[in-house]
Length: 182
Image (tube, rainbow, N blue to C red; front, side, top):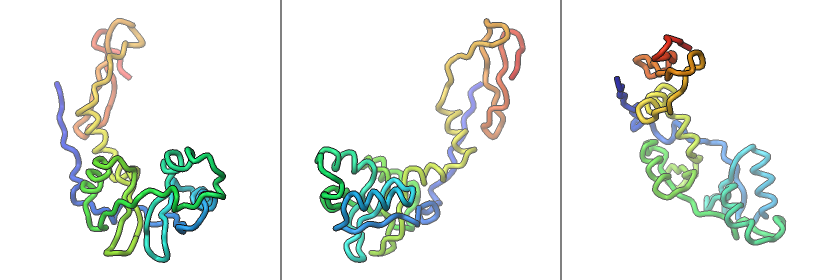
């Protein structure tokens, strides 16, 4: 019997509820080496680039691989402004669904979150994934994921069938041949 579940309604969750606020910041005129030290020091995957008090770009691990590495120059000799990526903006009051659609459309991993003209943080794919509850994720997987047949370890003939409770959590696996259960 196939079971169907609905995904949790994330449309009511605002970007401001899931975004990262403690985002590393670097200056437009900093060297790539300085930016890397800042990013590593904050245990982050990127930084927002500022010119004065205005956010003007991003530098990420992906940016470094795609834009800096091909230059074949010393990190201390290249300015952040030469390799930074553009900012993709989203308002802090936007829904996480809107943020996810925007990220999927442009194939970026993060959006810069603004309140008016003020940068207040960023929302990443990871932030959005954390917003999905474990239960909701399990339901989505149970709806869309069909595991390959798993042979029974006891009788070596039967196939284990997944038994899921009403909340979408796998309770056990039962053999259709020898009644083995795990």
